[in-house]
Image 1 (tube, rainbow, N blue to C red):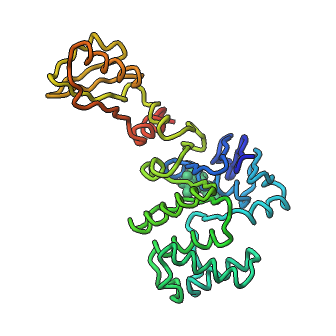
Image 2 (cartoon, rainbow, N blue to C red):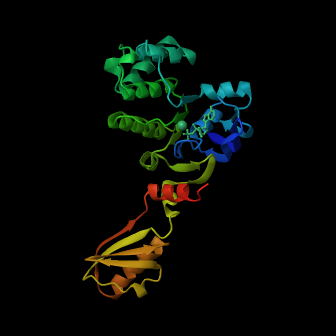
Image 3 (cartoon, rainbow, N blue to C red):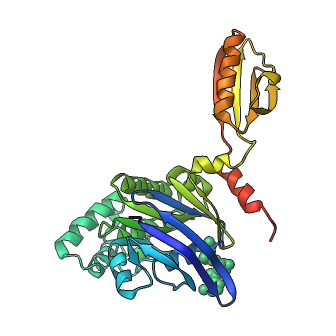
Length: 308
Ligand SMILES: Nc1ncnc2c1ncn2[C@@H]1O[C@H](COP(=O)(O)OP(=O)(O)O)[C@@H](O)[C@H]1O
Ligand SMILES: [Mg+2]
């Protein structure tokens, strides 16, 4: 069973098509990233899969429950922790009171709420501030509390809309560490982000959304391979010599000082050829490494394609 299954999801605001026939699956136990620029349709997707917005068409299953069925939706929500975009804790309540309120909403017992709240306050480095009203919190502290609130019932699935966006470095790092730790404990995380670095660091699979359409879905490394020709192998031999005509898999070779940059569509073949070349010519390999395009290259290539 998949954690999330979305088939043909379509959502209009009036006549504006915000999400266009999007289909994807989130496997149990993975960190899945939904990456796209502002206005791409990430929040709309999150709001439909969490049952806040009703799609115009499409099927949505969360933890096996049909999100278009009111009763099943409630079941799914009981087992899911959600961080909506621009969520806010109650600012006139303390961190502890916000957590209590959330625990009560989930129908947890008093003792369990206290135990779990203390655990989460410590995890998110808010324990010292537990009795301070949230209005005195920084943006990063508020966002850490929001995530703690979403995790109060120890949900098996977390759905996070831009969990680290616009935060100070330390808060963002802490949140990323918690996301990884939840994954390690077997939890599933679906998160949106417009930040390629975060997507690359955290996610095992990424869906790239642009203007309401899912334009790619794969692992970060495989997405990087989409940028054909910009994968290269950097090699340094001693003594340095390289005859480009002997590396059949190379699309282009740049010689620079004591090394060469060999561009290729097949880095595996190129590395093997370079090793054989060195053996045949009695050269010592000083260094040999594959340089991948960054996820940013992929993003620019995919998102930049077409000018509609
Ligand atoms: N309530 C709404 N009414 C009309 N248009 C909306 C509404 N919410 C979002 N949009 C539009 O839908 C598109 C997708 O928005 P959104 O899902 O918030 O994107 P993202 O989260 O990727 O930035 C944007 O063009 C946005 O302006
Ligand atoms: Mg958004």
